[in-house]
Amino acid sequence: MTDATMSTGTAPPPATIGRRGPLASLLVHTALIAASIAMLYPLLWMVSASVRPEDEIFSSTSLWPSAVDISSYIRGWFGLDVSFGRFFWNSLVIAVLTVIGNVIACSLAAYAFARLRFAGRNFWFAIMLGTLMIPYHVTLIPQYVLFLDLGWVNTILPLVVPKFLASDAFFIFLMVQFFRGIPRELDEAAMMDGCGPWRIYWKIMLPLSLPVLATAAIFSFIWTWDDFFGPLIYLNDMNTYTIQLGLRTFVDSSSTSDWGGLFAMSTLSLVPVFFFFLFFQRLLIEGIATTGMKR
Amino acid sequence: MAAVQDSTVAVGAGANARPTAQGRLASIWTKHGAGYMFLLPWLVGFFGLTLGPAVASFYLSFTNFDLIRSSEWVGTANYVRIATADPKFAAAIKVTFLYVVLSVPFKLAFALLVAILLNRGIKGLTVYRAIFYLPSLLGGSVAIAVLWRQLFAGDGLINSLLAQFGIEGPSWISHPDYSLWTLVVLSVWQFGSPMIIFLAGLRQIPTDMYEAASLDGASKFRQFYKITLPLLTPVIFFNAVVQTIEAFKAFTPAFIISGGTGGPINSTLFYTLYLYQEAFGNFRMGYASALAWILVLIIGLFTAFSFLTSRYWVHYDD
Image 1 (cartoon, rainbow over the protein chains, first blue to last red):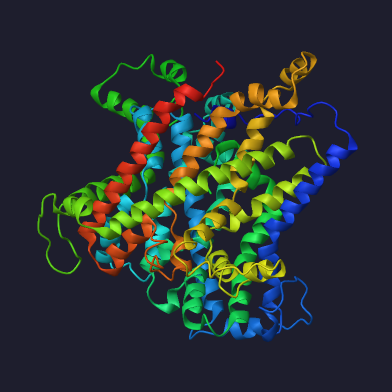
Image 2 (image 1 turned 90 degrees about the vertical axis):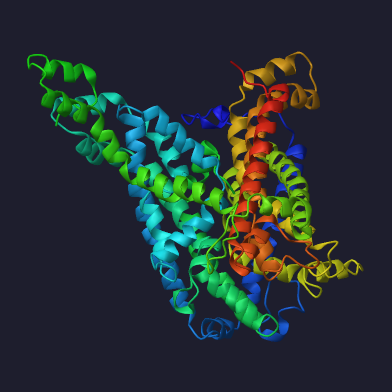
């Protein structure tokens, strides 16, 4: 069903449909610029609110603060019993481990599906695709009971260990698509030279697959960083909170008082994602365009 | 160790040796074992974290499991109660369907419109594309939900903007007639991801079709209806299915904006939020398991329905 979006390859240049006068072009640009402003306005307003003097936050719809006051950042950072530094660190640890787990485990499975011949391969591949369809709510409660019995609740283990077991089937699928595009002659030549599957995987497939591995790594990081549901269920002690849980606690504890601090911490929580977006935009957009990732 | 999966090489290497039982076992291993070694983490995960829990969850849905006391088999009581005597379930279904029906078409329409504007070989494509995509990437985070809650508050930014035009806006978030709309607007704001897929789809349409149509004197409007839309139906179909499933599963915005309650008056009680409340608020885990399976059924039925109807409007060029 994804035929049209799946074919990566070299896309033809965008269709310039007929000739357009400067007036039509001006109209299109005006519409796009207006839409861009509407899209960005809420975000810019939040950043601007985070550096405004407290009494000015709601009185102005303009994006330019009359004076820059960063005290909101200091108040927000230390606004809870545990500082936001702790939340950032927890999020970072979970996100980095998730990236490592996803890249290793998913690429191993993808290599088997894409390149090795073994009995039952097609069967398992179909099952793997099937798991993409299942909403996580079905496995949620027994998984919770399992991790509770293992004594893992309130640790990062329930959030990280499944990633080392390739629980994000989506990335397996993404990598299989990429691996299939790598010429088989490379494996065959390596095999003639006496390479086993491990060496082929390690020395040939992985180095040639850096773009898809990077795409998977970046999306892993961003989705984990933004994840709210997993931490909400498994982390109950404030010392183990991720940035998203910390923010939510901040909302609950100070929703009527410290808006400046709230916007400051909200802004900070988006910085890593924005940073990844800025530097890896091309990879992210290609990943979306070729596989139709969710969100 | 060498000749593993490629049968031609394997035959060459093993042709002279007479197959013994042990040798046969070894050759089965070299042929299939490596595949399973690579697949091992996924297999453990599949059985331990997907299949096992799915079976357990199905079983639990027929019990009154509550994590504390020992559970009892209650037969279909959970399902019967869901279907006949649970007003919050009815509310959650209504809210979730409304959200899907309102947010997905608007989101896709915006995505398609902007993709078509961007697909004219205009200058600055990458900049526009990045700007429109950014909200999709940030969308799932608590910060955006917090921001939205402020934007649509009674004294929030939206009402300040409306006031400049002399309109007095309601308190969107705390008014049950409007609260769901704020979530719909948030979802539509994140149209960037389907837009990028539309863009990729539009680029697959051969330009000479438009040139031929132009020569035949077809208007732009006609070209859109006769060429662009039909050729794009597979992508429209794909986006619609993916976005609908995502909308069924939405959670974070409703949780943050309603403070976890789904209020006011259950007007933002998304299905997943109700499931969370039952499982982790009231610890009615057997009941929540039944709710989870009904969600699977709904998504499954919807997907099957989409695929069945798709043959009448989705065109694949063979």
